[in-house]
Image (cartoon, rainbow, N blue to C red; front, side, top):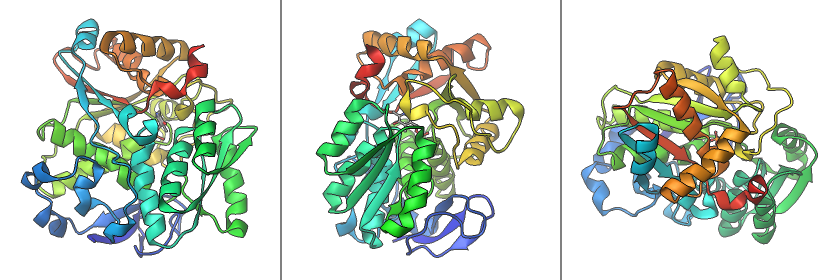
Amino acid sequence: MNVTHLECALCGLKHEARRLLNLCTACGKPLLVRYDLDRAKVTLTKESLAARRSDMWRYREVLPVDAEDNVVSFGEGWTPLLPARKLGKKVGIHELYIKDEGQNPTQSFKARGMAAAVSMAKELGATKLAVPSAGNAAGALAAYAARAGLQSFIFMPRDTPRANVVECEQTGAHVTLMDGLITDCGAEVGRRKEAEGWFDVSTLKEPYRVEGKKTLGYELAEQMKWELPDVIIYPTGGGTGLIGMWKAFDEMEQMGWIGSRRPRMVTVQAAGCAPIVRAFEDGQRFADEFPNAATTASGLRVPKAIGDFLILDALRHSGGTAVAVTDEELIKATREIGATEGIFCAPEGAACLPALRKLMKTGEVKHGERVVLFNTGSGVKYMESFS
Ligand SMILES: *Cc1c(COP(=O)(O)O)cnc(C)c1O
């Protein structure tokens, strides 16, 4: 459609678009999709959106799939941006919102990324897709691959929430449970993929999951009537959602949809696995692997992220920050958000609340600001966390 090429996010090297590629062939960093936005904006106008489908494919001109037949979809995206008035009152924020990504197919925002990645894998001729996952990426891949008629090979830590394991098995994936962390699972995929003929759809190791996730940024702008919030608080593992939103804001500015003002982007991580928080505080552009990573918020148990520099760049350029919260705080917050607003958050999403309180205490977020918390998934998959 409007894709011109892929571009390395670090060294800028251009790559041909219509090929199955993983990382930059020169420096091994993530590839990003670039579009002819002047062409995209001819038909993709703010006014045109009113009549479009109510899922992420409403932004079709800035999504990479060429042939309509290759779009693999369960209706992901266009989730509600819920005003959280009672919670706002409790914490002292006048305009507080929760973007409820738990309402996506397969119950997390991983659906957006996998919808785009699986559609592209199908379009470009892959037949076997492999992923290391802390849980929700696996569930999403299994479902989208089944719908696309592709095979999926999934590697998860043995202590991944049981619901994630069961959903993958029941949607036809080949599931392997491993002793270790998501990074160990990733290494296993890396070792075997060539011999097995797998296409690796790990976070940011292919260019298209970010494209699905960037629709979060488009939606937020559209749902807020093109006035972005002052602060976005985002539970960060591999960082695709944050990186995707940041990319969406740039694209929208280039199309003349928004100005140059950006929300302050805030990363939340669990104290037991906070590589980005540590790197942010230490002034580093790349994050060291976090030793002995442990947290019940499985989506945040990512000790080393390949897109670390993209996350850290966005935090710094936006005037944002990075905050760690303990497992005790985020589990308590799940119940508080649930009892106050009726939203049963994933523990990752709930972590945004104690993070907001910390930022208010230090004066980094003020009462009159408009704040959006990202609930990235549903709490229903985390029974072990609440027992
Ligand atoms: C994967 C996941 C995250 C982290 O998302 P990234 O894009 O990897 O930063 C947060 N919350 C939930 C529920 C997840 O499944």
